Image (cartoon, rainbow, N blue to C red; front, side, top):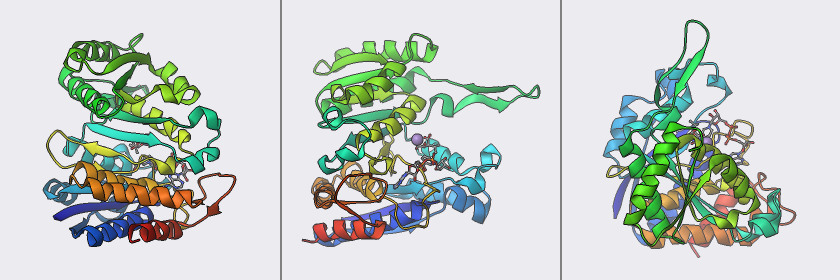
Length: 355
Ligand code: NAD
Ligand code: IPM
Ligand code: MN
C-alpha cells in the first residue's frame, strides 16, 4: 500500500523521537512492501520561530489531505512567556480542533522487566492493562470565555454539548467492547453540571451496549484507585482535563511517561498519533529520550488508520523483545538491565524488525 503521512516533529525531544519512529516505519515499509511518503510540516515553537504562528494554515491543509498525521511534541521554556495565541500548545489544541480529533486513546500497559522502575509496588501494578479514552476537543480547554478580565480576575469555561458527550461516551463503550468489556466513566457529578449531564448520558446509552459492565467513579477517587488497584480498570472514559491528568498519573504504572503512546481520532477524517508526553526540555538534545511512546504511536497509526494489524504487531513485538533483553533509556529507573541512548534503543527495535 501507499500512504502519505504528515510528520510534525515539533519541539524539544520531538524531532529526536520522530527520527526513531520514521526509521521504524521505513523498516516496516520494506518488510511488508508498503510505501510511506512523509510530508514534514511546522507546528508549535518551531512554527512560531519560522512563521510567527503555532499552527500555519499550510500544516492544517496538508494534514487534511494526508492518510494520517504523526506528531512528536510541542512546547518549551523559550515560548512560555508568549501570549496565549503565540504559544506552542495553542498549535496542538488548534490542530485537534481543526481535524475534529474528539477521541484520544491512551493505552497503558506495563512490560514486566520495567515494573521495578515504578515507585509503585510490583505486586500492585503487575497485570494492569487499561486504556483511557479522553475527550479531546471540548471542556475547559476550549470553553469561551477564557480570559483575564480588566479587574484582574480570570475566567475559564467548561462547556460541553450533549452531542460532544455522546460521541466520546460511545467511543468508550466501543473501546470496552473490544477489550474486557468493562467501562469506568470518570466524572465529578457530585459538583459539576457538565459531569451530571455526562453521567446521565452514560446511563442513557448503556442499553445499547448490554455486554459492557459500566461503573461511575468520581475523579478524585479514580486518581487514588488508579495507583492502589489499577487492575480493576479496563476502559476509562472521561472528559478532556480529567483524562489529561489521569493519563500522566497512569504512566507511573509503566515506569515512565516515555512509554505512553496515543491515538487522536475523528469520526471520519484523518487521525493524529502522538505520545502522551511533552517535549521534555530538560533532556532535549542529549540523545537520551525514550523513543518508545513515539514508536508505539506509529504502531497505533498503522492499526487505526491503515488497518495494518500485522505491521503494528511487528512493531509492538520488536519493542517488547528489546525490553525483554534488558534495554531501557535513562527515564526508566530499573534495578538491572542496560541503559541505552535513544539511538541504541531504536537500533535494537530495528534489529528485531528485520530478523
Ligand atoms: P513532559 O512530558 O515534557 O516531561 C515531564 C517529565 O518526563 C520530564 O522530566 C521529561 O524529561 C520526562 N519525559 C517525558 N517524555 C519523555 C521521554 N520520551 N523520554 C524520557 N523522558 C521523558 O512535561 P512537562 O515538562 O510538564 O512539559 C514540557 C513542555 O511540553 C511544556 O511546554 C508542555 O506544555 C509541553 N507538553 C506538550 C505535550 C504535547 O506536545 N503533546 C504534552 C505535554 C506537555
Ligand atoms: C497532552 C498535553 C496537552 C494537553 C497540552 C500540551 C496542551 O498535556 O497532550 O496531554 O493538555 O492536552
Ligand atoms: Mn498531558
